[in-house]
Image (cartoon, rainbow, N blue to C red; front, side, top):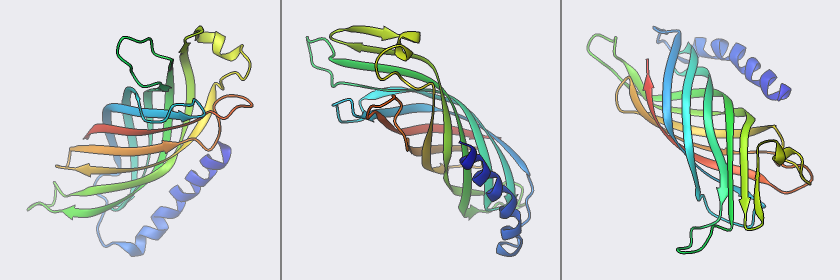
Length: 214
């Protein structure tokens, strides 16, 4: 996580220098704020069930710093429901269900394109925001249900191959804005690590959210 933070800070300081010669536009709003609400579709490699069957909430806020009109650094604080589950079979108990609730803190760098102009210039905006980055995930609560029983809360840390309380995910996303304030976000995240000790348990997910940008 320290390497990710250092790389992010390095980009934050370099972007203003890069932007001095890349655009004649001026930054009219240095700081931005965005509310995001939507859902995760997640799965875990190693649980023996393929497919993004586990649906959960993804809700939070984003704060950004615009170094140039086309470059922005941002971080988010999110309530994120992740996990995995076996496919539903009618009239049969579900073989596997894993609910994991995280506080997620993504750090991103955004590049913007397709400028939309207004007559007075005050409502100009970019339709596409392309982002890459990484997120820190802190496990707040979890529940694992199988045909053999249920594990939840602190029990997840006390079994063989216990779950990790912290992990990092790499991410890439695209934002499309219909207006200056309203847009949608599609994101893909995958962990470069397993979330259980000494066991293949590698999460990835697709995120779809609505955005309101101040």
